[in-house]
Length: 260
Length: 260
DNA sequence: GAGTGGTCTAGACCACGCA
DNA sequence: GCGTGGTCTAGACCACTCA
Image 1: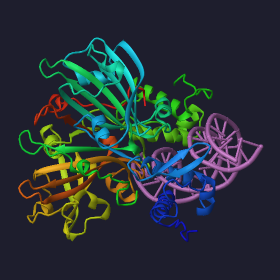
Image 2: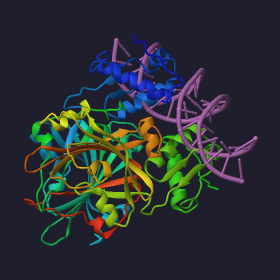
Image 3: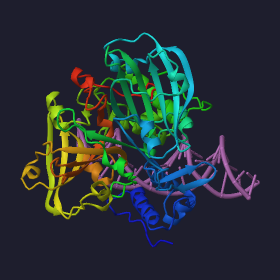
Image 4: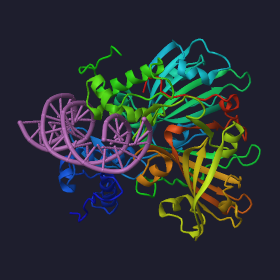
């Protein structure tokens, strides 16, 4: 039992105080990895706050990958091991990295259409050649049996690489963008998360070096609580210092230091 | 007045339906950029839902950078112009890019301490040399007068670059990581956002190439609704295809296509 | 001082899991 | 069938902005 109590006169919000205390209890081992947390109603009673307040704090810890909710069952403390969070280097084919690091990385074709228009909001990324119609594929990406991302791709290749799921060939030049997104209901169901959960959205446009023609346009939505991205900065002309943490196999854990 | 009404039997959540309709109305010009939205109470009455539901949807649009809330005043539609969202290429010094793109990019020193321990949760990033004590600096990064990020840095340099705010020298090798975070109360106040708002957390570790010694360890927290990151993938040995959208000056807008 | 967004409460119903 | 998380409601109080 914790001696912690909410200070309503604190400049911190109530849910922030509860979150901080919950993290502390998890870090101190009161709730070990894999353990089931008390129910939201019990936590609300324990802290003397409403369930909505407990919920807000639990949701933020889920977003950080500390907790995992299972509807109808309970909320569980996630393992801090490799399974809970993977690191993907942006500048290399991501599946190769994970396989090399000992993960089981699968790409499962969910839908495939031989021709498909590029959605209008992605057209700005392929301004040079206004593709008419490309092969469309929708892939679910799983790491160690856990859904981690959805990829929509529009590909100009005529081979069967797309249909067979071998998406990780390196075509040529590739450039991309990362932004934030939030899961729709459909996306949440596929990814095993909840509507409104934070997602990383990466949009990658790759071209064949010889012709400059579009090879593939892909949009991938990553569950933000399950992935970190690594990158390297250019040093001198053409020199890259590969992300060393990957080589060391270090797995970053959660938290900003501030406890949030 | 919209003829839209909530369908409670829809598989979509109520707040998802409201959000979709609000986006539609904004895109159709009913609420132009800079316009003030009806108050949350009015929207709740109009849609026939509770204020909490309206709020959840408005918050998600704020998170995507579509809306901006001003306490005591109202909620406003953000311009889709350069001011609302900036693109930062991860592999280059970010301020130089923004200045080159015509932005006003300032780095303001908020706090500075001549010696400061590296926080324990960052030690894993500098495993090679276990730094004793480094110069600490806390910077607020502003673009076009708008706060966009906070940088905490631990620097081994003895010059006064840190104190003078010139943090964007390129030291040597640099590698980094991106993950998701959520604003604490303090961070939210500095950044002009709200507690729990989504942040990108980038941790960058740079070293001097000659010695491999630590040059600087920095953690930057970016307001996710105000920034996109660009990156390029390695092609052949040492070759980089610079992110073309930056050169074109294209400014990506919001949305995942799915309308969320 | 009226109106606004930010936070919190108390209660309700549902779909799902699991024994 | 009970307990759980997921969603939504109705109402309250506060700090803040602005006329």
